[in-house]
Image (cartoon, rainbow, N blue to C red; front, side, top):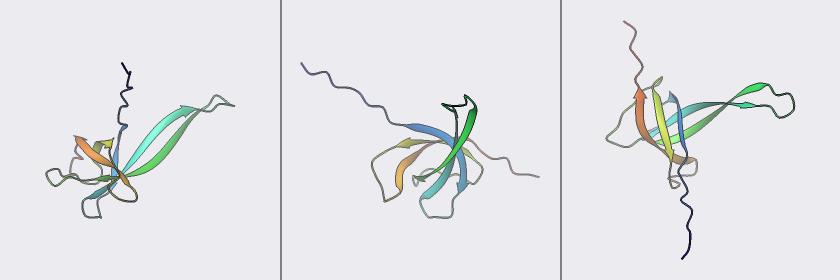
Length: 91
């Protein structure tokens, strides 16, 4: 018998910062980690490009969840999993 490790896909929650490209969104993910030397909490930001499926839609400012997938293009290795919170329009 061989024991195979089940490798989970990475998922991130972030804010949509751009929807200019067709079928692509840019998601800003903020994480916090402790500095090894000074023990201070440091915020880190990273932008991920994610594929936007045809049946889903989102706008700038929405909070979304993205999931790792096979490489779709040179910089797109994530796909939109769900739209968690829509941005309310200012009236």
